[in-house]
Image (cartoon, rainbow, N blue to C red; front, top):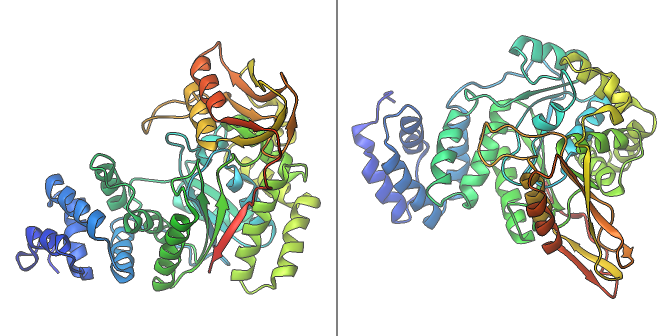
Length: 439
């Protein structure tokens, strides 16, 4: 096919085809997506097509074809020289420091994690931001050094580049201003195009569901998980998805330095139970994908936290990417904002809800997140959950602690947390962390 937009496949005809409920071929999607990426298809035509997709949807075959076109729109990592490559992706949550724990666990289990990670945006955190709170650590590696570190250490993480699936970046920017972000085939293709371009043979997906996630219901989460697993299968990858709860933040800490501290405690076998269980569950999925028995895999995964092997991998990984490994062994030295404030229970009872979205927005208000890409953040601010749903509190007892810097955003953050806190006379039913699996 020609590099220019084909006269036989005119863009207005393709918009009309989708508007009327038609199904695109891969060649037609190449015309649209690659033409838009090169600047040949203007924003106003692509906006019309995105709205047609939003209203009419896409078949599984179309969604997979769209994802492949997006994945091939720029650079693709070749991980063929590495053994047992595995990637992990979370759809975004609050207090979600899973990658900091899971990736060294996988490396300690003999798998290879050569992964691209993102930065936080709005109320969701980003792995790169968290790691950059460790002095000296850098996500900037050449491709040769990236592959060599993955081979030697078993773990290398770099930031996403504009050359990886560039069609996704351009399409997302347009979706963001045309009210077409919440569209399942577009969400699935956006996530999976970057995962396919990143090169790993096995992909484990953590699909968050709840108040602090983009998918607020289990039905939405399962539909997204099935779409992404189907895309991976059609592309010849081994993809497994786990649906997990995000009504309440994961663990007790939200905020970059605070989350690194909690992740390090988990790697020492001293972390909160929900974070530990989620990391073990995802590690088991990766091992089962590589042919291991589930019960044996769980035992092996737990041992990496008990025997220090996952912590040792994390220490080696930090040092390899320029970070000071002394902070791994003395996480209390990490920068945390010096000022404190607390949200206290107005009455005695049980904590019923600590709304994840409210916590994420509170961290954002304190300066720990960004509204737009490229904004600076304060890694030391954040929120600590002193009590979680199901725990009893007395009147006046502190439920949430805020780490702030000279009061910046404090009033707004406190109001958000107070609105997201709910108490009751009776204990709620226990929260279920793992909501389902799609393999």
